[in-house]
Length: 262
Image 1 (cartoon, rainbow, N blue to C red):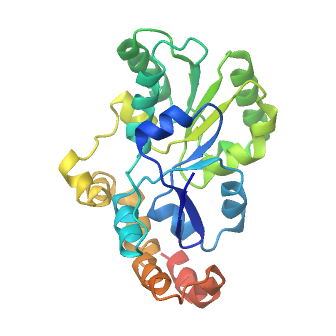
Image 2: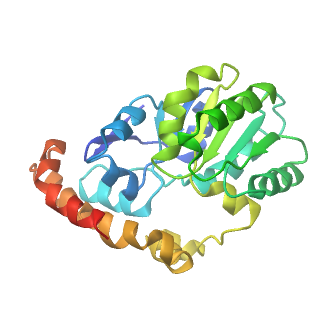
């Protein structure tokens, strides 16, 4: 499987159809610009990413960056497209049973019902919307692990935002012996429940989906898009001319300190 190096991450160069045909087991992460920027300074996130078997591009901006670097990526495979495609691909595969973990109270259950209705079988066997800060509540995490293990699920789809979802998989994956496929898919559960509006396709295709999401959720996303992700283009130019090294994160320390004050 060919991999494309973007900053300090190797991304799998697969089309969606190739990916679905290849995916029988493993851990799936969907990197975007926000992930790449967090990977410049969060060593625990880097460690979590190290266990993933698949890293598929979830950003039109990353597609542009890879092309600029001379190593184009075949296709954008966003989490919000991947889950419905995965469910349709396994529509008649009875051994594929999904547990949804994420979103606000009740939303994962709504997503479960809508997905099962569309697919025509109980492909999503159970769901749970965790409390805010659940990752620091060992009792709730134990409860979640028990729910998943008792659900007969073979696939875990977690959507609680990066880097929380990737770190949760890293920490608890070995306590989930029945799960063959782990997928960290961000806001996908909200999209499936109809609680978040997806950007029009043409906006996504030209790389402005981030602007649409910022318009929809300005209070939550302004810092990510307007502060934290700004150095990405500069780092890509550095990589293009062989100046980039992830060790250069030290040079950006003042930037991150300033960003943390906002």
